[in-house]
Image (cartoon, rainbow, N blue to C red):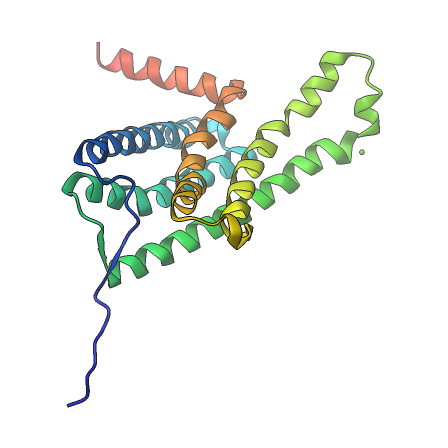
Amino acid sequence: MPNSSSVTEFLLLAFADTRELQLLHFGLFLGIYLAALLGNGLILTAVACDHRLHTPMYFFLLNLALLDLGSISTTLPKAMANSLWDTRAISYQGCATQVLFLVFLVGAEYCLLTVMAYDRYVAICKPLIFRAVLRMPSEQGQQKAFSMCLPHLAVISLTVITAMVAYLKPPSISSLSLDLVVSFLYSVLPPIVNPLIYSMRNKELKDALWKLFGHLLLQHP
């Protein structure tokens, strides 16, 4: 009989070895996951329920929130389960499914961010080309024009820089700990930061959320 074997599971990198730190990481991951669910869920609800937000820009935000929820739900629940149950194992099928969904969702998010970048380019450069903005007599007018693209630049920088560090860093500075931290940053941090970046400076979205909260409070005194 020929000697043969097959891979049935993989071992994921552990965030900690001691039980106390594993439970601490579980609590941290749970808080991050709930924050991502809350932030992106509020954006989805506000855009879906307020007809004033049924415009191309908010259509982009709605799809970005969906992709963020999908990407963080692909990796973080398994990390929480491993930290809680003190295990590092993931099945072959589970790993393949996780990689497939993560590559698809992250690739779709990059495509969406590219379209959003072009949308901001058209909104800023085409009607105003940058020289016209710099010639504005009011400094407040310049700040308002440039602030339209700053949140998007922040999101692009966060996503692209962490991914470049993960895959383009020289082998001499590569380590398991660094790879773990960088992969955590580019796969988990954007779904939390995106709702904050795109909603903090957006008055229409904040007004829609307050209107939604007020409606809920009136229905449930």
